[in-house]
Length: 410
Image 1 (tube, rainbow, N blue to C red):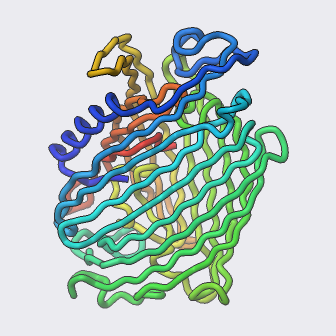
Image 2: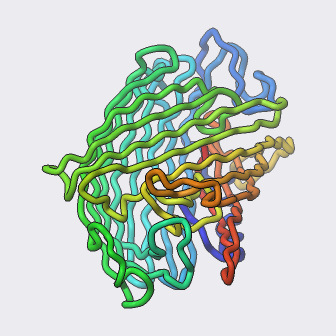
C-alpha cells in the first residue's frame, strides 16, 4: 500500500498508526453461547481471551494516516481505513470468517489523487465469498522499460489515469473447495510527464493506454485456520480470464496462480511458504501496462512495482512469524488494552520473462524483516510494517523499500 518512503517518514507513520490502533479499534462486541471451544491467537489458551463454549463476534474500525513525500508526487496526505465485521452476528455459525471494507483516499500537493474501495464478504458458514474493488487514480509512476535488465537511468515519469471495477463471487461446492466467476473492467491512459528516459522512443503496444474487460473463472482450495494471520493450513487459487475484442482494446488471456502453505513450528511460531505465477497471452499484441510486474507489498518486497515487467512472472517466498504477548495492561484514556505483536523475517526470489525465455540468471533475490501489531484479536487483523531489500545492480543503489499496510503479505 505504502512503500519507498524515507525511514524518518515511515517511523512517524508507524508511531501515528500505533496510537490510532491503540485508541480506535473496537466498535461492537458480543459473546453468544454456542457449543464450541475457540482460541483466537497463536500461543494462547482457548480460555484466555474467549470463554469456553462461546463464539466471539466483534466489529472493528482502524484508520491509518497517510503522510509522505516523493519527488514525483510532492507531499501526499490521506487515510487508509478498514472496517471489519461478521455477517452472522445475529445467528453465529462456528468458523464464519470476518468480512471487511477498506477505503483509501489520498491526494498530493501536485494535484494528484486516488480513491480505492475494496470489499471482502463471507456469508454465514463461509458458504459464499464475494470480493469487489472500485478504484480511480490520477497518479504518476516510473516506467523503466520491458524485461529483467532495465536500468535506473532509463526511467521515465508517466502520468497515469486509471478506472477499475472488479467483482468476484465464489461458492463452496465441496469441503474447503470453492468455484466462482470474476468480472473486471480497467481503463488506462498514459503520457510522459517529461520527454526523457526510454518511454518516448519505446515501441509499446497501446502506448497511450486502452481498456480491457475480463470475464473469468476461479477455483480455490482453502483449509487455513484463519485468512488474516494463518498458523496452519493451505491455500490454492487459480484464475483464468479472457478479455474479448468487442469489450476491450484488443483480445488476450490472463492467467493467475497463487499457493500458500503454513507449518506451525511451535505454539508461537509459524513458517509460511508462498508462490505466485502470472501470465498474459495473446496473438494481437499485449498492452504494456498489463504485463505482470515484479515487486509489491505482497511479493518481492524491496522492489519498485513495475521496475521489471514482462509477459510472465513467477516468484516464491518464505516467511517466519513469531507471536509475542508481552502480557501488558495498558490504560489509555477510557481504553483498557492488552497489546500483542508478531515479528517476521522473510526471503524469496522471482523473475519476469518472455515465453520460452526463462533462465535462472533472471531470478532476483529479496529478503527483509517486519513487525505486526494486532488491533483486532478476534479476527487476527494486524497492521504490518516491513522493510524489504532487493538486488544491487552495477552503478545503482541497492533496491529497498518500507511497507506500511493492513494485513499480512500472504
